[in-house]
Image 1 (cartoon, rainbow, N blue to C red):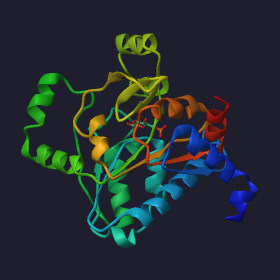
Image 2 (image 1 turned 60 degrees about the vertical axis):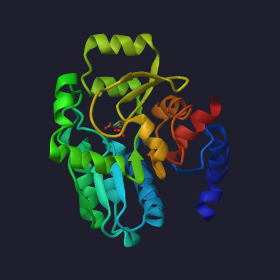
Image 3 (image 1 turned 90 degrees about the horizontal axis):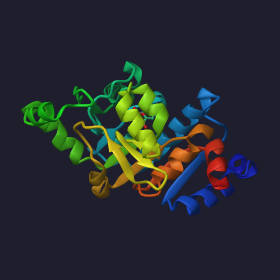
Amino acid sequence: DFMHEAMGLSVLERQLKEKLQLNAIMVVPGNSDSHDWVKQEMGKACVTYLKKRIKSAQTVAVTGGTTMAAVAEMMVPLDDGADCLFIPARGGIGEKEENQANTIVAKMARKARGDYRLLYVPDPLSETAYQTIIKEPAVNETLQRVKSASVVLHGIGDAMTMARRRKTPEDVTAQLKENHAVSEAFGYYFDGNGNVVHKVRTIGIQLDDLDSVDQVITVAGGHSKANAIASYFNKGKRDMLITDEAAAEEILKM
Ligand code: BG6
């Protein structure tokens, strides 16, 4: 629209789309590091996009985080997405309740008038617990649905910020530093070139599963996440990025 044009956001969008080799992009004004309403604007943009794309009875897998929580906050009934199912993309992460994928999918489903499933699985998970838990029929049923998701909504985090937030053990944190971890998504940590340097073991979507997902929608913004976003998109699946002006400008300086 006119405002968009006037603020030069469409120019930013064109340049960033080119730089990150994305299929589609949306840049909202402002910096979500300093204003929560900017995160909500990204959430609104995500909902608008989802509303246009979603078809009846599709499964939407969602990660945790404050950005996804903002998407849930802005969710509206999805006309063509009647009977859609919201499901956590991965096992629960030791985060604040309001930022966990389980909480977020329940809220999204309520507002979208869809359904949801929960995945109450600790993260990280020991190898033995992992082997046992995936055999549980209830967990397995949910996992099959996660694997057949046609839409994935996810955030990206700054690697060290996420390591701190997850109360990552010191030896793992040291290893992340040594391997120059820059970004985090889906419990995977990536270096500046987008190579995986660490992975939190849990059930749910694995990176390779994204190849067969129809629409992967990434929502991440803020000046502080510029490096993380650029790092993730060196290799990460790129359908749609919703970000903010501050992150976009910073990435274009690189
Ligand atoms: C976490 C996700 O819950 O949120 C991560 O598991 C993601 O994959 C992170 O990177 C992003 O959090 P926020 O609060 O910056 O949106």
